[in-house]
Image 1: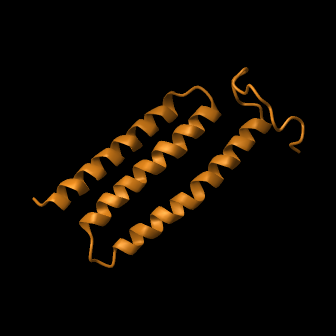
Image 2: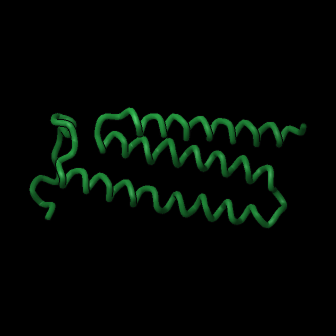
Image 3: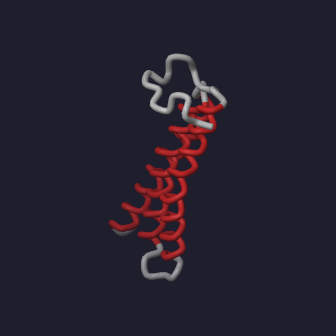
Length: 110
């Protein structure tokens, strides 16, 4: 095995571990806002690490560009989805009491 294969394997393993911990957190966290955090941050970083490891392994092939497109699409859509989920949770007041110490939106949401 070459050094690049070791690096690729380590990236894939670490990314899969992050994705696993994110999925466990989604099941275990008590409310929507904390689940939203677990669904976006470690999940996206884990996916990017897995894609980077696969990209190292597939370097020189045409399939690498598909991995780049998947990574870019994920980086562009994850913050938007997280914002929409959190705004919906705020509107429906499905968060724990005392979780929001500062309410910057107040009564401005329609």
